[in-house]
Length: 255
Image 1 (tube, one colour):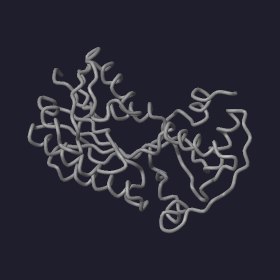
Image 2: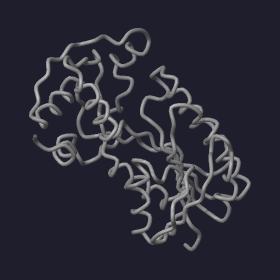
Image 3: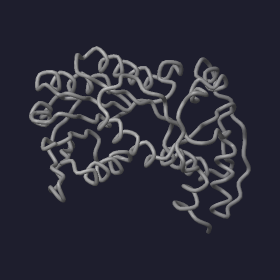
Image 4: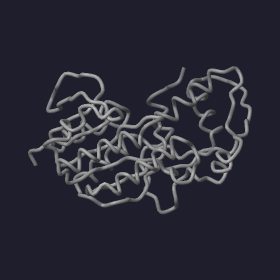
């Protein structure tokens, strides 16, 4: 294959794993970014803005596969619409989309927008693959670290998570991109489910820190969805190999 693979979100948490894996597989890579970066080691950076539909068509021109990894708290549906419009126009043969487990069940605004983006991909006419993944270890660590700065750490009551390693997700996406369009594929989550309080305690232990924890209920429909486990993977989902404990030991360490 001589045409490059286009990666949106190639400089983000997931993209920083995906781009090197694509290069290791022998693919040229084009990264769409809102900010300029120097080209390096078989990676071409192009400037564009998906939400404003600026520079999208030139970024898509000449590619056969697109990995759509870019995401934001708002505007994912608008950004995805701009991308699939350009992909359809330029004859892209495979669009790979990363989504989130529970987007059709947890009534968060961001999730509703992500679910609409899934539907836009499916209706685009471009051959597609969609993978839903659990929250990345990195995101969970950021949230836990922020909570643990408080003298009394609030613990969202009833919230359980099944965090997955971004490297595991990246490897799956690169394999899916090479395999060809497959529609909605099995979800990917981490190897274990954790209560939020256990995630916080493990972080504090790794830091050698001590804080009192206080359970705080999540109100309304969102709280009900989390208590029901609507954000968790189904039993038939695939699981990654790297655990939260392994990730935490490497990223935080004692002291």
